[in-house]
Length: 471
Image (cartoon, rainbow, N blue to C red):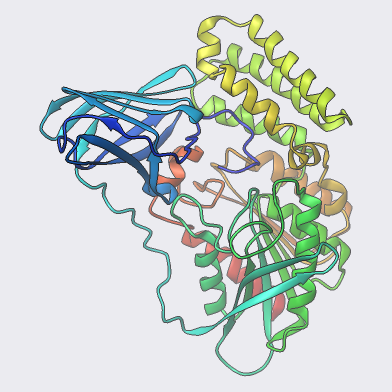
């Protein structure tokens, strides 16, 4: 999902390289689709086949919910009624057998695991996102650029301005972890486009930016930390305060997930920030948050308690190593050794349940070696929250498994009380997940299957509170 989710759920590692294989021409031509179910995830997969007169078969893959279109599959072979597809770099295979003119039964294989994936001929159903606004909008929309001169980066974004003369109250939106575009595009959803549209219709100018290294923004996100993104956010705040359509005394900040940490940091450094909205924000050290997150996700995924406790002990030790060991290479060696020692004490069934194969081991070592992860794990948000004196709204969904609501809202309130802040509102919104959709399980794999982009109750809670503090 994003860098904040440092769990080893199944990922689709897709490498685009075309290799043609010999097969009888035309037998599969067209699109075939099916739903892959694994680890609580439901992902629609579409294979597109074409062949030449000489019998060369080529295949591409679409994942509509993730915005993937036309990704080439390196190896594709049809022998009589048996289909074989392979993406070597991702360790992905699909083996299936035709059971009729328009049906294939088979299995998707990855990381030593096999998952049923039946295919039917035809296009997948269109992904519906009914909340995505359509032009023309009843407000102004401007393409803008923001200069972070300290970092030598130009950020690109969109500023929406309500109709009417005068200077408007305003807010900047900060995305969650990972290189996100200005709309925070995720699994076919555009949460920040929906939120910006709603807030602009309610009278607020709204600035949203492509993260550094994403969209039209410059810079490299791969080596950046939360501190670097905070530097970009500070530049955005300076820019918006000076805009001719904005009331500089009524500029607030809104962040979701990692963006909440960024919003808090900018607000702590700028006492004139009018308000802060923290959506699914953490208020505890990174190690504690990610241990909580792993516990919530794996428990929801049905992992037995005894097995889960073994995993949590392992992950805590690895997270603490990444947070405290200054030498990256030494840390990576310790993280790998911890993984191998833990697996040595597990049964083969437990290793399979937790998907702790060789590729997963390499993945966790790589993840925890990144500057972003090392900084995040060592960071404690509470001291920053204790500096906020302006109005603060903190919201979490009750089904948030990435930033569990009860513990983090309590920690947020404790920090704000310690600040002497008497102008805060803390709310847990029933039935909503990490990105504030009305959810069933709250698992990240469910995000794409939900038509709703952001629950109306969340949109209204945010806008009503913001109107109340700037009136």
